[in-house]
Length: 287
Image 1 (cartoon, helix red, strand yellow):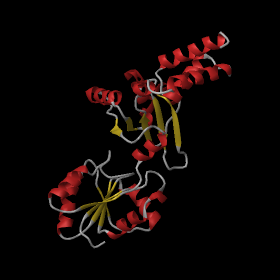
Image 2 (tube, one colour):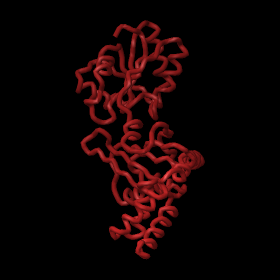
Image 3 (tube, rainbow, N blue to C red):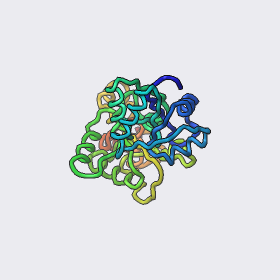
Image 4 (cartoon, rainbow, N blue to C red):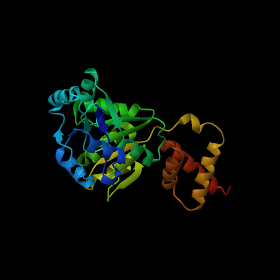
C-alpha cells in the first residue's frame, strides 16, 4: 500500500470468511493497523496470514492514539483502523480519530464490509427504504427515557443494538412505551453457526426472552407504525373482511383471527378484533 492515508476497514460481524479481498489486502499492505481489541483482530490476522503490526485503539486511548496516527501519516506512512466487528465509528471507536485526521489535512478512505445494521434491516422483512439507527440503548435515567421516546415516535423502522443480558428488559420497556403490539425482529449471532432470527410482536418477544438465556451479539429491528391512511384506500377493507370470514370458516377463534389480521394487514389490535367479531357475527347469521 503506497498511498498515505487512514483506511477504515469493515470487518466480519461473525463469520471470518466475510472479510473482503480488498479488506484483507489493505490490512496486509498498510504500515500499521489500529484495532479496538488486538486479541480479536489477531485471530482475523491468523485466518488470512496477515503480519502487519497491531496497536490498540479504543474509547479510553483514542485521543493519544490519534496523535500517533497523525504523526505516521505526516511521515508519509499509512494505517488502517478496525473494530471488533463491522464499520469503525458505528457504535464503535473511530469517529474522533477520523475527525482529527481530516482536520490535520490527511486522507481518510473506506474499505466497506459487513454491517449488522443493514443485515438485520433486510432480514426483518419490514420496510427499510428508510430507518432510524439508534445504537445501544442507554442503561438508565433521562438518556434512556429520551431514547425510548425516539423509538416510540419514529415514523420509520428502528434498528438498535443491545447486550444479550438486557434484551428482555429493552423489549419490556418498548412494551411499556405503548409499543407492545408493534412487530419486531430480534437477530442474534448473525452470520455465525447459531444464527437466530425471531419475529413477533414486542410483547410476545419480551415474554419469550424473559425466560431464556440470551447469548451473543443482538440486533433488534422495530417495525414502523402501520400507515392508517393506506388502510382507508382502495379495496383493502373488503379484503380484510373476506380474510377474517375465511379464517372464521376454518374454525379459528376471534383472538386467533385478530392476531392474524394484525400481522398480515398491520392493523391495530382493536381494529383487528372488531373485524374478527364482525366476521364471526356474519358467519353466525349464515351469510
